Length: 179
Ligand code: SF4
Image 1: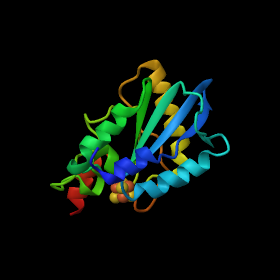
Image 2: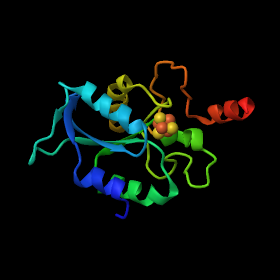
Image 3: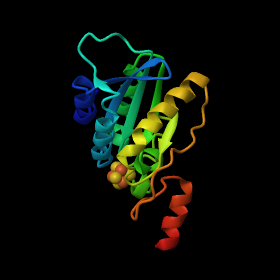
Image 4: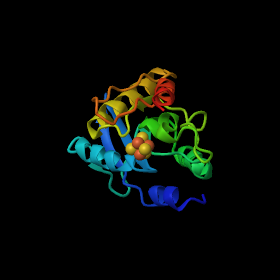
């Protein structure tokens, strides 16, 4: 793994264990850009239902990787490695417009148009940035989708904000029309 950003997140992870639908769930946050701030606030909001996993904690029934922020080409292999490092069963959440589609940087030479085929996502949270209060629902949706074998995620509703962008393909056309 060559990216210090991803390596830091995984070697000194803040793992959170919670219970959803009778399953022990471990949430693994991977903040890559400004959405990481909202992700951190969302993780805090999960408490007290979600507690910091102690060393040697019982292995969970499901891991949830939450990727939040711009996925550049340079970091893509490490994001994939982060996903591969999680034991099965595992699901992923794309948190924010950049993680879904590249967001405001969708046409940048250095930015991937979202996780795409890099990591299969079971829940997506639109917004630039999404509110932290959306995280719990997204994690629950991802766990439920993984348990049901559902492939195509339905966006988790994000409260409307003045500067929010939806993060989907439609937002790209809106952007170009604005411009
Ligand atoms: S979606 Fe917006 S807030 Fe989130 S990482 Fe991208 S630019 Fe930053």
